[in-house]
Image (cartoon, rainbow, N blue to C red; front, side):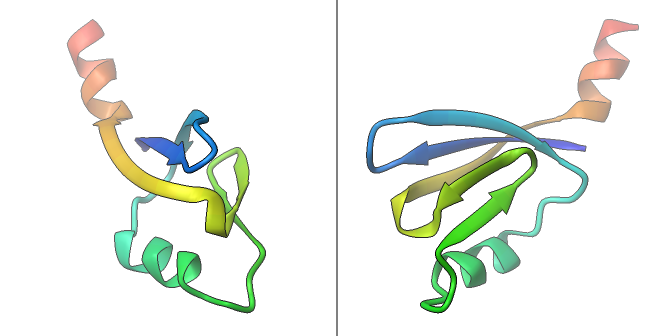
Length: 67
């Protein structure tokens, strides 16, 4: 599990947890003219509004640190 920080051109910031982080697939989706929205974890956002997607932590590491 990887936690992502999603920043938009409209000034919003979201955090989403995904099973697997694939930056190449995310980049492909964000550049696909035939798509209107992208789904990142539990966040659905307009593809043209996405400014950046950054991994901020792996959930497994957080759980190990808390134990």
